[in-house]
Length: 440
Image (cartoon, rainbow, N blue to C red; front, side, top):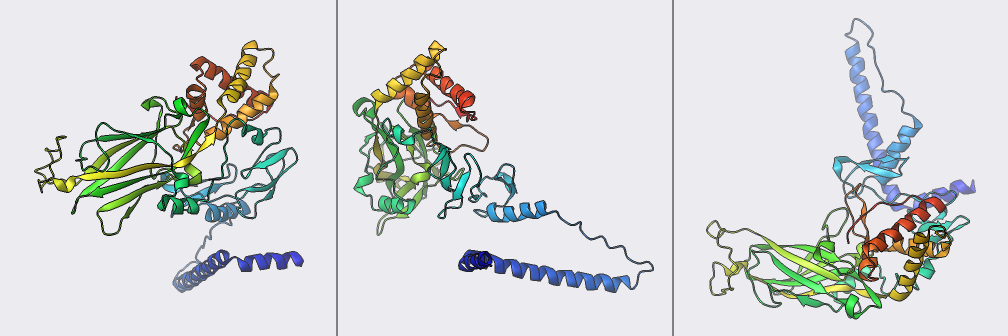
């Protein structure tokens, strides 16, 4: 009796559930009236039949079919898209080829790495774990993986880990706490100077901290630009942004997939009493990632008159020509927002060399169990900060980029370390490895 009262009280306090229940009631009432009208119509028509009509009702659906239907309604109707819930995979198959229909799916209560209790604040996260496992960022991980020890090598957490709403407010205010000092480089444009953007323009914001600040790695949580246009401009700027996580050549950077796989888009806000706009990209805590250099490519979707379509030269800007100056823009400010994290390159290099040495000696491969667990934890936490990829595609391997550019390991050393970690993960811990795609 007490349990029923408790459930009734929780349901009564859930306004979203009450509204959805009312919608269900009205939908069922409409279906009941439609069934009655159809039954009366069939009865009226059957009077004229020489033989008794043969009515075939739909077969009775199983409990599992109803459960799948209810779970699909609960978990697979996000962002205006619909899908079907698969119990075996605990995920949604979205209709129409998109992957944006899935809502947070409740945690599993059970043994091992399942939850002992779900979080009261977020139904998709754990509140506590079973024996032998500990809670880390809403997931249950083996207790022998000491994530706190990893902080001695790389500091993954900081006082600047704000909530996304706080980050959005601080970015709008251009808060100095999130300001990252970078060097602007471009041979094609100058800041605060009008130019014709109808040909591709390149800009870079770089730290070069792998040469000057070896004790830090850097996290990007947002980018902002202030762009001014001529009056009555028909220009629609379009940006392509490539990120080098730990420096390296341009080919070792990845492209920000704006608006794809849940990734954010640029937000454009016009400044009061001016032709200038603030362009802001808020990555937030979900899509924050490492960066050393940000490459920005500017292309423009312009609605050009037919007479000017073949006259998009790269010559000097002529502001006196009224037929052309409507296309000119200027970028008065480009800024990366984020923070720096402590990074002990020497300590991490000694741990990596220990794994490398154990792997080459063969017989002592499993003698450094604590170091293996430590590097597995560091590799997993670094690769979690990789950018989103298309469904079915492997995530990018940022860990190997860090080994190459921040620890200066050779390609053969990187291959041996990753192979040793993969073997230990599958043979000793009996866990499946996630496939990763090479970036560096």
